[in-house]
View 1: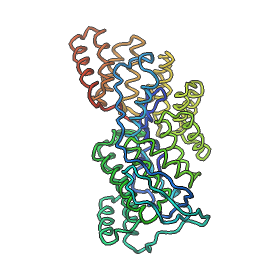
View 2 (view 1 turned 120 degrees about the vertical axis):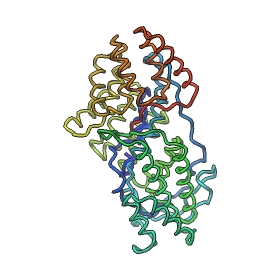
View 3 (view 1 turned 45 degrees about the vertical axis):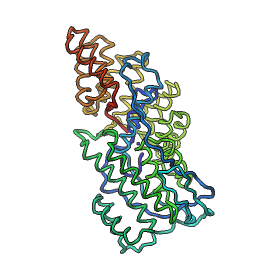
View 4 (view 1 turned 60 degrees about the vertical axis):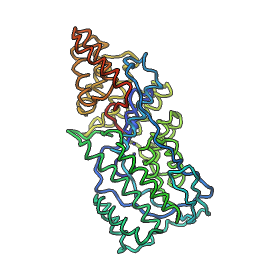
Length: 454
């Protein structure tokens, strides 16, 4: 999901032929580094010479993918696998999106005039005014003002107290754009904190570990958008604000609007590597793979060894059917972290998945075993190992890996359907029957996908 300077995304399981997910991603993303040290946002405004349409208030689009029949690359078309990748990136966003408030918050002054339509409604929110080359204007409040204390609390990770104080301030200053924008940031940070508590990491830090945002998280994302809309009545948002707006839409599964606001943000801050990464992930989830390639390449020009961007570049090439370039990108990402103490399992999983698609199961096993060693609590590598061992007719090993995957993702219809024939071939008829029944039952419900990665 880079995310901003602190980690939030995407990865939602990515996969071009989405057998992965958006880093999957949907994806999204940097190694989870914690939220306590994130710099507070600056509320300087930015220029805009023409009106821009605000995020339509569409509810999150359902990305549930009933992939229970996708046991082989032949039965699971690339488009379907791409749907899986997208769904997982949403989860990743909540978990690993790093939010860079600092670099994105500098820019130019913007004429303080916006239409007052809520961001959650379909009406347009327009920016007006002439662009300026002057440096960003500082917050109107003095360093000792109430909002300075709120920002300090946010820097320290005390979101509950920051939330309380800014709401208290808004009771007497309802027309404070900075306060509304700050509350929008706080609400988004609360989503991150809650996701972190719900899915504690075990062992290594896994990119994008987490689950798709629950209803409460989506409600907070909508509330965050509402605050940015309220603030926009009084003056324009900064690039940092637009980044959070885009991330809120990512959490709601609205990639079209996320794309729109990330594009606007990058027009103001074209050197934001994290912003290009997020735009690439978003383009990937829109199945706009060529544009995703461009965004990841822009990210890599600014951040030369961005492992997540290189891995996602491979996914985007795979989405275009350019397998050799995809394999080269995965291998590059693997090489970059060869000496790292803390590795990202994504490139190993993605390369293993690509090799399975090419019926190179024995080669895939070696990469997938490394992924399991790095991230034993992620279900995806166990699932792919189960598939590889099944093709190699090593059924006891396939059973063991698929059972591990099911322990981590018990609501995955696909996994129940994969393990059923493995039981049947070994003569475990009752177990096979039970798994087929579970597969059928879950296929008609909103099952939880594989453990997401940014």
